[in-house]
Amino acid sequence: MLLGLDVVQVEAVERSPTLLTVTVSSPPGLMGCPRCGVVAVGRGRKIRVLHDVPGEVPVVLRWRQRTWRCPDPGCPVGSFTEQLPDLVPARGSLTCRAVTWAIAQLRREHACVSGLARRLAVAWKTLWRAVRPRLQARAEDPARFTGVTSLGVDEHIWHHGDTRRRGPKELTGMVDLTRHQDEHGRWRVRARLLDLVPGRSKKAYADWLTDRGATFRDGVQVAALDPFGGYKAALDAELADAVAVLDAFHVVKLGTQVVDEVRRRVQQATTGHRGRKGDPLYGIQTLLRAGAENLTDKQLHRLEVAITADDAHEEVYIAWRCAQDLRAAYRTKDTAEGRRRAEKILASFHTCPIAEVARLGRTLRRWQQAFLAYFTTDRANNGGTEAVNGIIELHRRIARGYRNRDNYRLRMLLAAGGLNA
Image 1 (tube, rainbow, N blue to C red):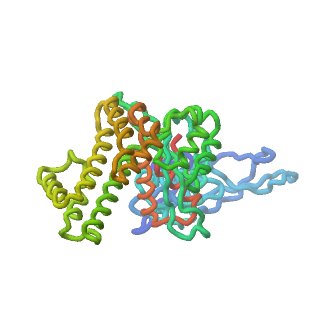
Image 2: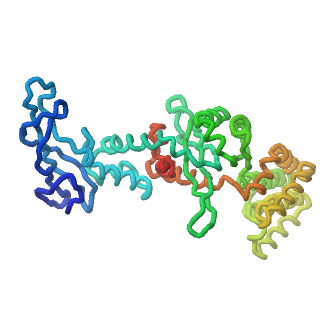
Image 3: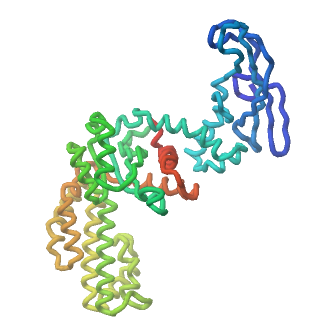
């Protein structure tokens, strides 16, 4: 009872400043031969050392494991040893609950394997050898792909080493963005990572969708993505009935990049050099990246002074206003009004005399259906995918990098909720 393990009883407890040792054994009873069923003859016990959930110090169980001999001379078993699957696997050195505890620490407390191994007083390989089979079993469970109606996709860089030795740097991550109703009746996205596959291409995404089967593909109604043609081609080929939605964050980011490009071009044309302290456009570069509604009166005055300093700066102001119009379409509370603003953008941007704005307009027109779908899918977006990417980056930093892609995939699936069916 004190130990919390029903399958064994405590015989002795020893405590030192650095270790807690608990001697345990199973209750006495008859044992039959696992092969022939004849009542076995006891041959004593042997000590097996197991590592359990730590407290202030590591905890070690000294299990006095029973051994038996089959008395039937014709039985090929001979002698055999006591096994308690609820306590520890056949050849394991970590108790089952220690492995469960370690997985919970990796999932919820942002721990690393090496740190948990130190707390358990075992080697990194010992702990991972116990944890990995459980994670693999969960990853191979097809039940975790059921119920996905909204799907997100984005690329991810998992290493910065030599691709000849470690394979592609890019991974394509698929995220479940299905909305669930919370206890207050509100619909929210609980994003979870579904998989990480090597490469950033149409083939990588399309092959993964194909492997999921027709039932999974038929269930996906909305697919959010960034403006990458490879992912869009995969969706058109494998999820033709799903609504593709261009992610709002990436669209606004494109508008902000246009403003930066125009500012740098005008800066070079008017001064002959890159921005320096004291240059009007250099002084407002951060203001140009902000939303107009967030600027104070003082900041708006600084913006006005910089724009009026030279007639050539008018291009920068027009580009900034275009980016603000793009941002305002997404911020509008009424999606019907937002769609009208977006349609106005599609009709006007590509005719702008400023080359960078016209290029953005042509890009949006190529993605017209996916761009407008945001306003007809209750604002579907890739925000949950970006949140999952943030969790992945956090755990990669905690581990100080990874060398094995398979281990990386399992760890990130666990951290980002992908192994919760």
